[in-house]
Image (tube, rainbow, N blue to C red; front, side, top):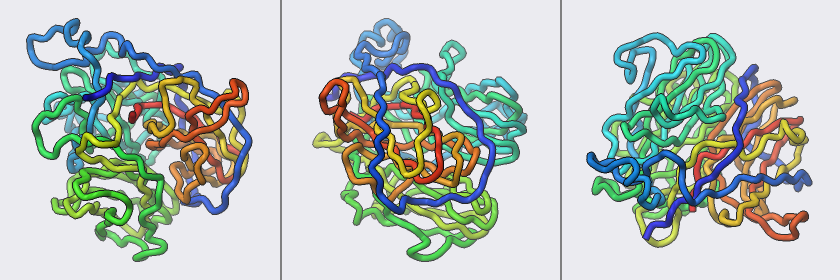
Length: 447
């Protein structure tokens, strides 16, 4: 029996823009227990999202009838990456090849979705922006208000990607918005969240949090990826069981010698025309990606140009089962915390964020978009369950003055709330060097 939804309601957000680029470290080196503690008042609304019919999309069912149905948790069907939007070629825009202008919104169809699809996982790439800007992705339709968060931050001339999980409209569309200047946008689908089994293969899977854990680092094994080189990464030794259909990863490119892109895809199928990560020379660039697994529990990684080191961290996997794991509840994106309202995270300090809502439990995972902004030094940020040992992984890599986002699935640990004298579910966010601000937006719950 599926559980009914728990929806986060959060405050509105203000998106930021990027400025610079230079190298940063890819992983933590030393442990530190910081003393910065914050509380977030995000709440759980069991009534559901106003105006959204969560029931069947079958013709003849009215929105009122559908909305009255129980909103159930969703499960994941992975797919090899496939492109649904490329404004450079007109794909997804009816042949229109112009970039998206300042303040421009485009509505993009997501075709070939399984029945009962509620949300999709996209890798969204901005390229050739003419100004500092941000991009927001959300449910399609002109009547659906743009959420107050950003999905992607760009500076003039760069190419950058970020993963996003978003509701699709009843017409199977998503919106993309560009704030300033003009920019081309590309979107690749990595999978779908469905609220009932559509009878397709593979069977929808539940999420099992395992990390974050480092599974591969080419600086230690194999050396840099050469141009047009592919390697298979084996997850069978990292608690990923037989039958798992996909993994949730953070892939970081380090010390690229040329502008390049990296593609992650399941073994056993041809490499798709899609990208998972874009890396500039000498930059350290991460991206959270959800990737279908081959039957051998492996994922291929391909580097397009020059040489680049690749670092892979796993956060969890998907497995079709009724025993254990968690269903996913997509939410209207909202802001959980912004250190610009309280003060930056200091060097080698950990921000502990307490979640006050009693319906969030330790062991649940939240899908977060983490944006680092205004760092004063080359640094990285590591999110992890509060109360656990800090892992040797990272989710954000920043250089002075930069604003950069990355999607991360982070399990809730436990921390003591000295104000109310109770233990609460909590996340920890470690900053390695300099001062940096961190903006935390919530996109979904695994429970």
